Image (cartoon, rainbow, N blue to C red; front, side, top):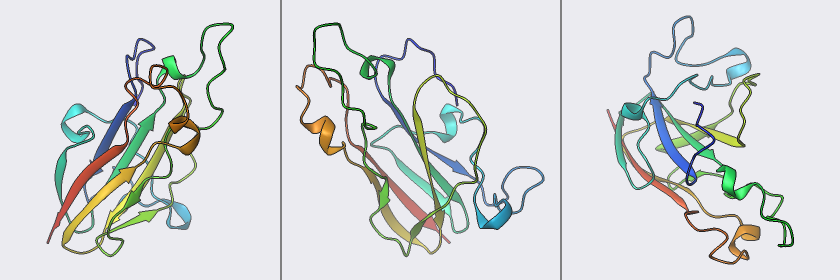
Length: 159
């Protein structure tokens, strides 16, 4: 998914790829057991942080974190922003319900830093996906990181 450069804040979203995957793939899996990331994420399948999502066993759930342009550089004479991505690694609260899986390499280019995580829905249950603010960004003055929030979404896996 591509976001305009006028992005006012960090974009956080989760997307679901149904168990049938994309055309020409089996269950969204690529070579070597990696999972292909969807090429586009429409608002209907990409709820924001704070959402609750229900999927079926076998579905792939994606967390996409996008660093907003305003966090990439600051005015001259100010301390530069941290050189690390604003969020720590996304995790599932219950790996028996949602297990993180490797993404297939992608050659897609973006103008903003993007990190995507994939999770496979294994068994019925509920898991919370989280991506906390990275430690280096927690030390930045609040006015400089305005709008930057931890990611949190609840995923209910139905049979």
